[in-house]
Length: 79
Image (cartoon, rainbow, N blue to C red; front, side, top):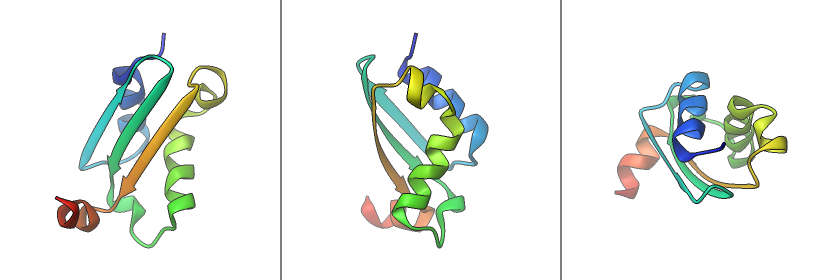
């Protein structure tokens, strides 16, 4: 079963994050992912990087995932 925690664990295992939040209801999820790996990357490249951490789960288990992918500097300035 897909849970926010299982998504959070997969992202954390595949991407170095300084902040990570995942919420959702079992079908639709939202993630805030803050990583230095996003520096210099486009929005599309950032999302692709997050999707890569989830692998086949994006196709098979997760119906919808909204991603806010930020660099640490962007995260600091958005608060």
